[in-house]
Amino acid sequence: MKKEVAIIGGGTAGLFLAAFLNSDIYNITLYEKKSSLGRKFLVAGDGGFNLTHSEDLSSFKSRYTPAAFLDTALENFTNADLRKWLLSLGIPTFVGSSGRVFPEKGIKPIEVLKAIEAFLIEKKVTFEFNTTFTGWGDQENALVFNDKEIVKSDYAVFALGGASWKVTGSDGSWIDVFKKKGMDTLPFRPSNCAYKIQWHEKFIQKNEGEPLKNITISLKNKVQQGEVVITKFGIEGNAIYGLSPEIQKALASKNEAVVSVDFKPTYSISALIQKISHSKTNTTTTLKEKIKLSRTVIDLIKGTLTKEEFLDIQVLAGFIKKFPLKIVDSAPIDEAISTSGGINHHAIDSNFELKKLNNTFCIGEMLDWNAPTGGYLIQACASTAVYLARYLNNQ
Figure 1: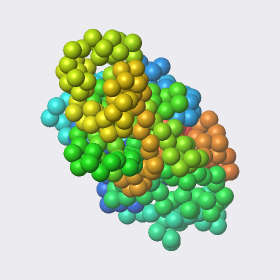
Figure 2: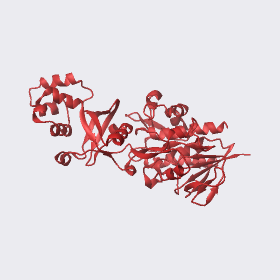
Figure 3: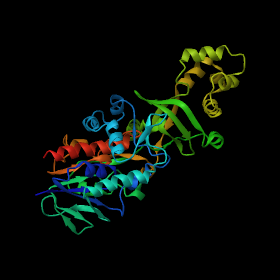
């Protein structure tokens, strides 16, 4: 007789778990609070559907915080494995110039989701829509939906997501139910989001919406390369997203985080000094024409340094290589791409089973981990799901 698996949450993690569970030994039911699957999965397709990243696995694993927490899952179902599986569904992918992986041109996000959904239907996965998990019943591990419907299963797997993008159903409201049950949880914090900087009024009037390209931003020993955009609120973009764990830690302890920007990472400070000192034009023209700094960067530097500091070549070069930006806050959670917090990783064992609740598991973004954008978020949700599926298939 088949055993029953209840999957709560129809996002990336829930979909991949259902796809890789053995339907010969399990009756699989997926419960989703919305009226359709993969709402946040589709949101990830805005501006280009980035499915994973192509870099080597060693580097890939290093993108996640806390270190090594997801290593086993990522090794079990790698970025290459994800591409192969999608290809088996008729979804070929390609590697973009940044190393990110996308569906072949012409394939829309909804088509990827429909291919996965069709695969699940063929496996005879049962879908229950408009069913919100609201707690546990009096019987052992009995699940309650919509405050009244009681479901008993042999295994319950929660894939409820984080707390960003409320419109997709990923609002983090489940955390109160888990806390009431005595589970070890951590408050949600925004990640991969805009960060607040108190710009000088004249600077932001002139430079709002301008990019800072080909830079590195660092905090402590963490360095992130890419670009950001200047906004009235502060900055946003991939060069700051990857520092979210370090920034949030500093904000929590000091109410500010001072990051260092290198506007010319391909130049050493000595090379900058030499190039500036050998120029026969004025300093501003030298920065623009010889160093190739943008008008926005020059405005930022000139608005920070005194005239004497700006004309001191060594001081100027030092600020080009290590420009301090003080972050004083983060964007609201619902404006973040992802969140950290949720189920404390100490609350689960190596198979993602809750230590306080037998045969009950948590996967995906509802666990407390962090990763930058670039395909790492979807990959980790898929990898935790596939790892758990293979574990349950051997029970």
